[in-house]
Image 1: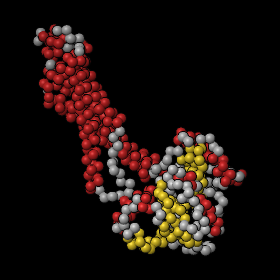
Image 2: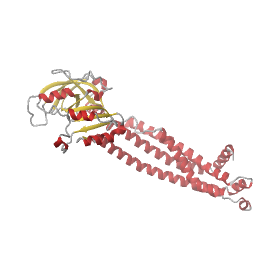
Image 3: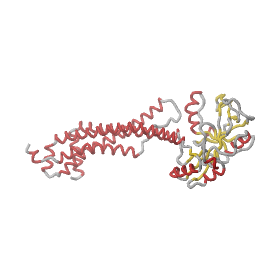
Image 4: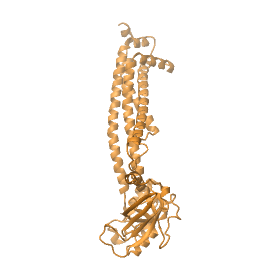
Length: 426
């Protein structure tokens, strides 16, 4: 049977029972649309978790010295220059960025004009020193260097801290929202070796000022990131350890090398700090579990849609028994009759899948629009809660066709088994 003839017969058959065709199409559209909607929602929320809340970069491995290390008894487990050189020499490592915590407490007290608003605030401000190469491509290396004793200290703020400030802290206190560009050049007083929490500190305090030179997702989340040489100098002046490092950030050439490099790090008596990545995986797993449960319910709707199509086509085959008998009598093969019924189901599934996918996209757009207008600003609020990749949209349409084909298989076999002589004889 030619395609044009098959298409003509399919249209005539569906037009004859338009109500049943619409009912079957609606069932497929509901199942597919629900599935696409929830998968897109899970993908969108998961993207926010991975890229904004816990942005663990795939090529970075965080190495720390273990709290208790048997290897340390035999000269291993310590993060010194020798260990850093060994880490940098590992196969697959492109760069090894050293980190040293400022090992004394520090506070910041601000009282003055803050971008047009009067602000008086004090807080504990932890600091960590890193190699300038950690911010390569984000902050010019000549800006992130030790300027010497008595000069302001270059500091990098975490982009996540800026997000929390703009979406939560600033609106609650009537302060202006800030952009990374606005923050560049902002200075605030910092006093090292002083704390408002600890009962006392040993040694004199070290007053200084921190000048913001950039914002980066690699910046310290709960504090300020400063050049490594500055941290070393402050620790030495305060009588703290200024030789060993708090950690090393290994930047790999290929993310696939992470397991192998991590194992090599452990063999050196060191540990890999996966806390950030584990938090991202835990949050992602929760999103995936919820999405999977909702997607399973959507698949059940698709199964019910397939059953509905099977009932509708079975009723259509029974009602058209004489018509199908005539087709067989004038030369239509069993395969042609089967193809006719299957084509009817496939068309219902194609239309239902397309309508369901489009409906899911429109509903997602409406939800995003309502969220932007009705929900208050909160940290990491995305522009869209949904992610509709091409494969998801195409998969929704194909799922509708698949559900319809499954439902039409049984009625197609019964239609092909029609005995023209018996039907025409009445």
